Length: 104
Image (tube, one colour):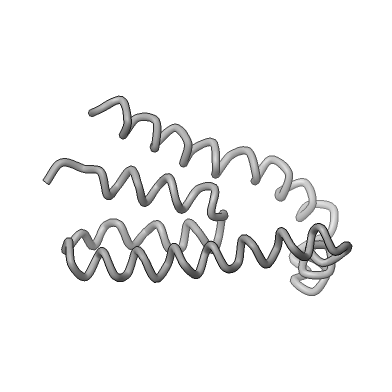
């Protein structure tokens, strides 16, 4: 495996673990209350801006993944879409780049 692929994989793991280290304690404290989670994301203009930045980036990444998978016929790369929306762009993007950089 190339150093670049290893870097993408390491970043995908970091992008999964680091955000979850903050998210899971919040869930344990507040429960699975989606309205409370959305309210926390929109507590200030700064967090609302970051929220929308990530939503737009996740949507753009999803369109890119679907467009490339239809051309490259790399169906496994589709797992980056749920990773993006269930974990975050910090995991989904490097995971997709890892899967996309596989030698053909």
